[in-house]
Image (cartoon, rainbow, N blue to C red; front, top):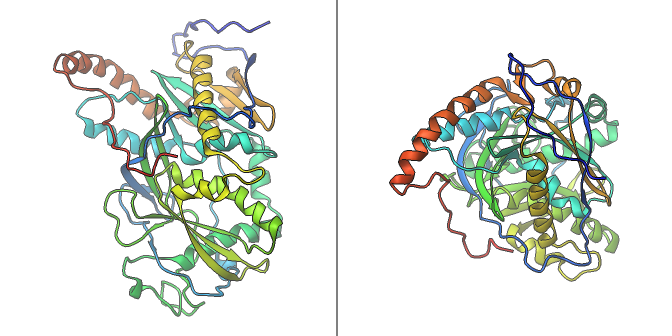
Length: 428
């Protein structure tokens, strides 16, 4: 028997709502890979809204201080170099506070308009959603809130999962470092390649040839874009590794850096082509046009590099046995968003839903009770997983926006984010 949708909750005088967990039978079945969608939803080319940086002390700054510039890495670079000096950011809950700060800042430039946005999320979460049809091993969970028509996504990481990610085996930890080391070899703090330190680190101390500086994963340069999947407008934020030349305010010269084991035979080739699915969507979602891949030996020494144009990646696997199809992913993503909208609409604005994906099975949705919501809040100043400052800002904006809409509609103005012209080639 199907579960009835929860009715509007009655808030207490404090604004909190007492809820019991609803074991939901809201489910979305795993998509068929043998019958891809005949008319996949359109995906609008991402358009950059703004950028920001995280400092070594993890302070968010609305500047480009963390921006890095692409340089060619030296042949045979040792990706083990600098491992003992790695400053590793602790594993933490997948909060979206930084993205909300950026979105809040951008909205202030819209002269009182409140754009109709369907989803606000980090890029990594949207990548997990879109690539789910081809995920055979790893389950994942999201926390989702819907406030005034906008769905907010946060990756849910239990304490056990966080501990697992922190306590990597030494071999796996070193392998994860290789990607960061490759980024150091491939980037400089200046757009002039000749200013890169070819014989030492960026601080001028002796080191490996072409080394760009010790790795600190607290430091990030992030881009926030607007895009659209089907009828859903989406705000996505994510880290950008570097740019070619100078940053000119758009995504046209963004570069994604990746490492992979050298391809030694058909089996390695098949594994790499599977990895290309995530390479593709990670870049596609932020409008990054180029993926620069460094192939390495198992021992961590760089052998070759290759440039992949993002829009051309699907063609590399098309028609091969077991190949992935981006249209299947986009159709699934559109279904997933529709499923969520229809499942969580109504009820209290403070409701938090737990979305669980199980490979080869599908998705389920559960409305969290007060105990689980408090766990999501983690003792922090939040309503659900949204920071209280943002919640209060939204509450004030809604009242104000109702007046603005009355005025702007009579003048023929639009309250939505402006339309972006889709460049040829960005469609699949």
